Length: 472
Image (cartoon, rainbow, N blue to C red; front, side, top):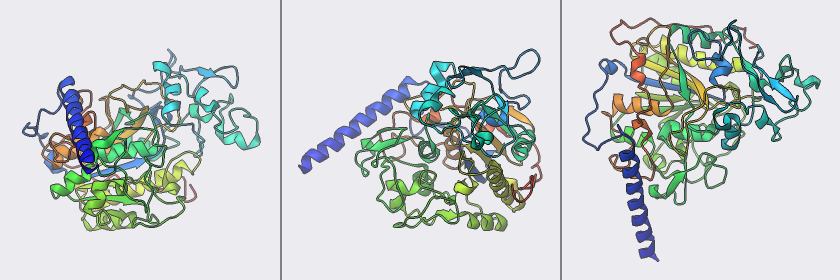
């Protein structure tokens, strides 16, 4: 029996190597081996601290569809939004509408519903996908309780959009720094797969949590074998970026809500806290083996570290439920306030002149977007989300039209701190069965083009975290 297990693992390893070889040779420009030299962008060494803030569930058109210079809503000759998609509840098409409400209901956001939304590239299924039991407001829009969730022609709020008056800090950052208008979610799915891509470049399920070659692409992650929960043994067998960071003595922190339990075994309500879907690192076998609790820390410590000039090289910041922008869970204004406080802390600290902050959203949350996402592999990409670069070396008032995804964050980390080494099973010393090294896809843009390292560092741009008052 033991020999059979050994033979099975050897076979899996061989299959994984063949898959990787096929994937990399089929795609021009992918990694050619461990000795391949990658030229670091001139000036990138001025950035000693990379911070990635990941909010929840907003499409690009929902937040920036009317932003000047961006690839926003299609418009007619009069400059008016020119979109109307089928609305089976009303029997006619419905158009996007402006809302100032900080409360939204959103729509289904998983692999099944994204396919309905995209509709083979027509991008017109966002209302139709609501038929699958998602609330009553779309079927009974006249209910008094539905007033905040429907538009003036009784459109569901997946068709809503906001402007600079409604999310002023986000638009201010976009005007002052760099807004990316082709940032795609890494998969056509929900929070957990996106955060797995954020830290590892893959979302998968594994039959053996100790065998990295036993994993296969999975962006649904519905079963108990695919979703890690705090206090349980790790289930993600493939390699995440912290393996390479630790191997190369690069400091990192994953900053979570102060009330999050990070030392299993433990259990808690997720309301107001960072749940495991947004903090998947404890579920990785390699991370647990390395001892992750020293690096997964509370956000109060982030504020202290920023003030003391002791930020790590790489930081990820994920909000708890009260501070996230996930529809139904709270106010957009709370989320914007949280994000602004995190950014202000970095700007006010001694490390600002060597920092780059990337603000993005993990998935589209069911909200309308008109741009068809490209297909790069079985996992994605997903529907468009906003992304903003904030840095003293960021270009001023630029809209970046490159095709990007969370893979670009990994690529930047690897280029800045790992000498261009990739999460590549053929070179990273820990083979897994990922079908392709996404950081090397020719389609993927280069975030270093959003910087101007020839300019003197720009001063902090401190914003009021509560532009609408303390009550949000």
